[in-house]
Image (cartoon, rainbow, N blue to C red):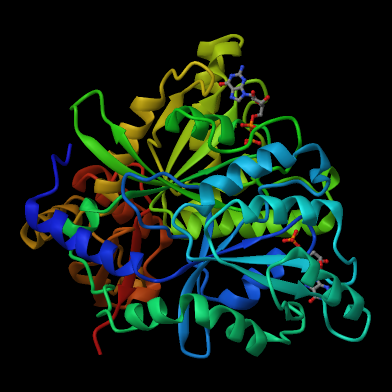
Amino acid sequence: SLGSPTTKLANSHHSAHLARIMRPQVIIIGRPNVGKSTLFNRLVGKRLALVDDQPGVTRDRRVGQASIANMEFDVIDTAGWEDEDAASLPGRMRKQTEASLEGADAVLFVIDSRAGVTPLDEEIARYLRTNDVPVVMVANKAEGKEGDSGILETYALGFGEPAPISAEHGEGIAELFEGLWPVIGAKAEEAAHTPPTTEELSDEELLAQPLKLAIVGRPNAGKSTLINRMLGEDRLLTGPEAGITRDSIAVDWEWKDPATGDVREIRLIDTAGMRKKRNVTEKLEKMSVADAKRAVDFAEVVVLLLDATQGLEHQDLKIASMAIEEGRALIVAINKWDIAEDASSLFNGIRFALEEGLSQVHGMPLFAVSALTGKGIDQMLGAAFEIRETWSKRVPTGALNRWFDDALIANPPPAPKGRRIKLRYITQAGTRPPRFVVFGTRLDALPTSYERYLVNGIRRELGFQAVPVRVVLKSPK
Ligand code: GDP
Ligand code: GDP
């Protein structure tokens, strides 16, 4: 266990947090298909950061850092809170929107100018009028002439002159700036003059940061149910509608470890999972794979959630391999344990298949959980913090060299064609995941079996069980 963060660490975390809070928060709202995601991507470009920093405040939002000209702000996407046919969901959609309006500095209310103002637009407008957050009207899909009448109609919604834009073609961004500047300009200026906070963090400071955890797995494994269970409230939409959480969503929360009594911060990423092609349209498939990959990119520890009623499938191994190849610490949890049949042989079978299928990692933590009853979840989270420590660990140079010397004596490198391969020394080049460099000569003649011997030794003897370990061979120049 890590214990509580020291005062110094808590303070540095706190000041970083204050600086980020000061960026204006702009939330994109609108009915499905008006182009919210397109606008979000347009504003954020490649700088998507699934980060929302209010410790203790839980949220589920897709947040990106946006800028128009020099005006910097955080933009929050609400797309993916509804399904394509959201007609059946407006109530639930509204609940999510309400939560997200708290703390927002401006709303970008998007309509489709080609479709004109629809009854659902009017309903959203009525709702926004009952709120204090300033609204900037956006008439999207306004390229060409087809949108002209729709642009006029939006005046009737009562939020003043709309910014006619084309999110898809990147037109009208200057108009958008003019609409937003009077609302958030002053705050954006202030934030811009706050010193940057992304200084390099030490190993110790990194471990004091919230644990970045991604839950990945096939659709219906129970990811959303698990997250709801952990948060103890109905925060993410769950239900029979496939693909309801279309995008990744970041959620900050605090978890009390019942084993130690410590309260620890966790930042969760939920993904829509990786759907098989035959189940969904091509478009959704592409989005969700990219999405799961992004969640893994973001995470320190990845939980692969399996469904006890389905067992381990090829696709699960693919997701797991992807996470390991990206260098993440991986935990596997078998969900729906409450309805598992023949439990012990199921558990052992999955453990065996994982060891066989994922040769890069040994002794991966495996848990039986139930998102429905809560069984096993605390143990799984405790293990997630532990494996992050292993993943972040630095071996003292002395211990590393002693192990290396012993390993070479116990099993000297071979001497192909009578010339011995010389391995001179080893150093740990990095952590998260642990990386080592071995220096020597004639290294291209070193058999891969010997490399494996070294990697396995590092894992077993130096305490890097269950995390990916990377070893690079180098000849000094
Ligand atoms: P959301 O559900 O509101 O997030 O909408 P999306 O961003 O997914 O966009 C819905 C559809 O509208 C997609 O097919 C987009 O390609 C399309 N779209 C988005 N912006 C524009 C635009 O400026 N012009 C046109 N013609 N189509 C757009
Ligand atoms: P996701 O697609 O991975 O987010 O899966 P969901 O969270 O939407 O869950 C899919 C279905 O499995 C829902 O009907 C859940 O009620 C059900 N489910 C999830 N976790 C459990 C569990 O631990 N036990 C049982 N019996 N059902 C579960």
